[in-house]
Length: 435
Image 1 (cartoon, helix red, strand yellow):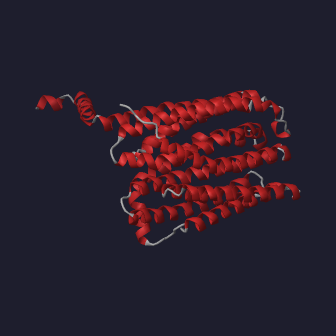
Image 2 (tube, rainbow, N blue to C red; image 1 turned 90 degrees about the vertical axis):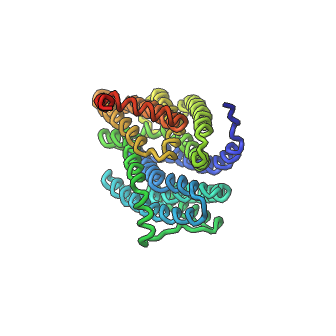
Image 3 (tube, one colour; image 1 turned 135 degrees about the vertical axis):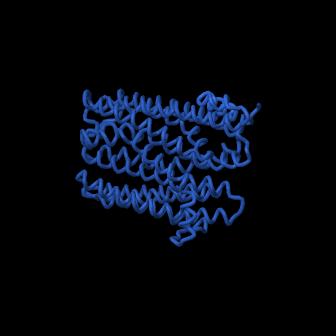
């Protein structure tokens, strides 16, 4: 089968990555500035807040943004699109508020007096993430890119002013980031002439409840994904303290652009693949998944090699004389598998197989937690990256296996049915004998 390279998706990707690149560049520069300005304890707390932001984005993605993108893309009329927009918009607001409260409590427990500011930042960031994905599903990429530019400019100005004027900048930086995210939401709403549509009325609740039998596995998947993806930060900070996590966070933040770019791929490909799957074009879905996986995997490897040349030039008290080359090597071993399993995970999500995704990440979480805990007990904190890399590799192998299995079953329904029947007869031989 000859598959044409999806050039129209490349044009959309360039537009999307423009907005993602601006945000990524801003976050990258802010992290570098704070790395040189804050103590190891202060930078460790900032890194934990960023981790909580990542947790918030993952719950928003699993419970509202991705389902909204999939079901809005599958809707055949504007009424269906609007109904799902309201249901998932309401859920997004609730999730964002819960993440804000949870972040404030966690930061307080870690001894950070800026917990409320960090909560405001995480809540606003989570809500803007949902709205960006919803507008991508509506094919309003230009509006989203302009909103991203507005967020970047306001965020750069406010955080720069804060760092210049404030004696203890961490709390004010969190407030500045919260304001910048709110401003990005405002620009998005004004240009698109659409608001975050919220309703707590019974029809909205019933609509979300009807979808819950699938979304509950998405919620479980988000939990296991966060445990699997963030267990490194949680265990190192919880066992060794925020200061011990600072050197790892300082290197990990250099790879943050890869996460931003991967989100652009998700926002670009998920609605498109959902439409192809709705039209039963499974061959094209699988071909595009393999193409983009190769692109992202090679891109992640090249980016990681480039970062290895930059690492020796970074000097900061937060690094605490840690071996950045050693840390960087195993960070690459973490991120390349992540880039490679994004596409099979998208395929499983558009097929509604949230349960498979959940159990895959749960297996990775168990592997990661056990190995990281063992390594922290017998070695220095940087060795914990080895356990995290094994966890990501486990998820990579399982994701491709299950995605390939599901696509094969869809393309060969008769053979799949015969295979299942044969397995049943082998398991219950008397069923054939009775006949």
